[in-house]
Amino acid sequence: MEVESSKPQMASSPRLISLDVFRGITIAAMILVNNPGSWDQIYSPLRHAAWHGWTPTDMVFPFFLWISGVAMTLSFARRKEEGADKGKLLLHTARRAATIFAIGLLLNLIPNFDFAHVRIPGVLQRIGVCYFFATLIYLYTTRRGQMLAVAGLLGGYAAIMVFAPFPGATADRWSMESNAARFIDGIVLEGHMWRQSKVWDPEGALSTLPAIATMLCGILATRYLVSGLFLALAGLSLGIMIPINKSLWTPSFVLLMAGFASMIFGALRWWIDEKRQLRGWNFFEIFGTNAIVSFVLSGAIARILGLTGAGTPIYQWLCNFASPINASLFYALLNVAACFIVVYLMYRKRILVRL
Image 1 (spheres, helix red, strand yellow):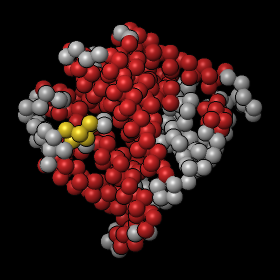
Image 2 (cartoon, one colour):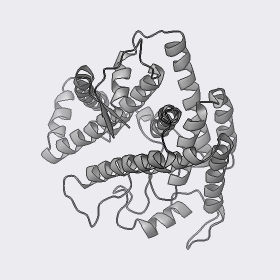
Image 3 (cartoon, one colour):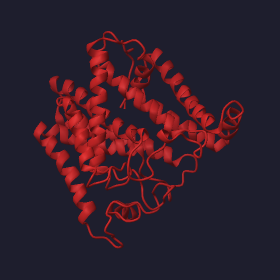
Image 4 (cartoon, one colour):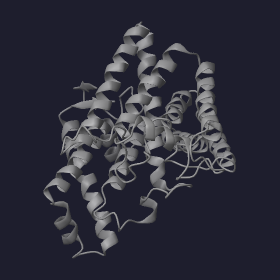
């Protein structure tokens, strides 16, 4: 992690304002979908797909990985121009990745600190692992090498999923009940997986390989941003053979989400950075400058409300003014607002925590 004390200026910052805005949109969406008032009362676009397919909610996590790839490229390009040593950059990356992983693990431990059954994977944990390996590939390969790495990660993952033998394998190698990722997670993560399933994990070990490819797509996008439509169409086409699935982070899912991210960021970059249409984006820019703080804070708030039982009466109170599904949405929006207040105060105090 890095803490800076220089206040960002939309008109003069060397950073891409559009990237902060895109990151802010993504983290605000992540808080929104992760913190409903009732998991039984949620609008369908704010739910993950049950298995195959995708919803707007399924776009959030891959977008965050993709954005991290873009941001890392911009940051490291400047440091390399200043003569930074690759070994030192990699060591710096390893420390940062380990910190991110540790924060995610700590959130999983709260409040019981049950090390024997704690969930080891998670969103921050996957970000940390992807950040390290994507940086390693970026520092020691060319653009061609990075493209080959994407192809190798996606192709290798698909080959394992389709051809690897394991007990109970069925003809449908992408089913929830029988797939190689679930089998491997059962070996390396037994007793430490997602509590809703206990037998597989959406941020599991094997599916982290294509997630690294998602971050590499963000790295490559700094030069090949115009390829967004091609990637999206490639993902949809591949989806005919390999289903689009976030929980398995399938190759078709990687390509489709990278394509969407490229097109959205391309539009934001043109409108905000090139056309200088800055009005109305400050809310998301502020969120984007302290995204990691927002995510950790939202997780902490959710756990505190769950531990104290305060979340239920808040939701029930909201039900006095709205239908249960709208009360659930308003509850999530209150979480977004609470996180924004904190990052806004940090923004005003010129405290920026970078991923």
